[in-house]
Length: 363
Image (tube, rainbow, N blue to C red; front, side):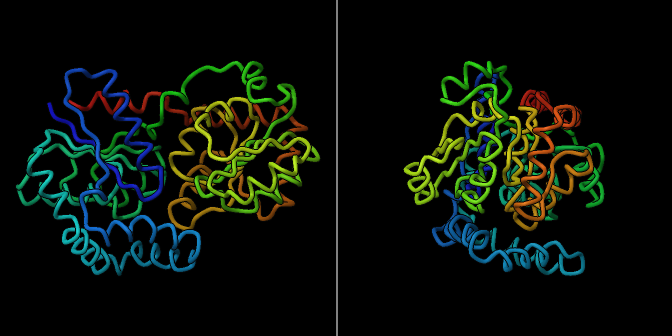
């Protein structure tokens, strides 16, 4: 059986979910012929640019425009027009991907981005492919673009997500609440003391992990300085090279500074709290690590929906400013019972076997 896993490299979350599924299937399903691609490599150059650098520009340089675009495509009365225009542009610019699907003729398409889901579902409606289409929604909320007639199965992050799909007219028998796929390394058991020694921090101090994705956006330095007076801080600067260089040279007491890291799971394992953005894949990793989140620098649209969804389960906090953020951190530090109660709520939405359950429907 031939299985094609498709993602789009607009943000890292879609790729991380696709890779988690791919790695699990490669290790556990030797009966499958599996491949994985970035759909944007099968589109024209301008379209790929708009989806990657254009996407990043809107999020980090023109967030008001992004907020308007998200609202415009979500607003019920404008959907017929916005969806028609978007679908037409997607089809025009994805001809290489369409030809690729015709050539490969996969039995199953697992999509972690609405672009590939929409195109595959369109071809299926036109009876040009016969693939089973499984869409893995990589956020807790559901933008209307995720829903495409012709899709056989939707993998939802939570019951909240399922409710959103039902409200969009998806039949209940087409929805499975399997959770968000994440890398197996976030499912391991860790020795906090040994890891703390490896990383070079005190294992017995209250520790906060501060990271906001690959761009290192937000008031990271201000937060780190403020919290360092009270707790131990692990600050991941990622692509923010100026911040990393400056703070690495300054050596603020109780602040350990990192650039890009490939051991996020270890940093999470030695932390009591995480201050971060609200991306879907990040939330999946946080939940699997049972780490209480405080959300900052939230992107309008999908991340705001994620925060709203977690609020339904009593998970996560969203401070109005840095001063309130500090109060939240100290409240958890000084009240271990409250921290444990927060972890209990996280355990209730934790889904360890998302990839395994996805594999169970591949037949």
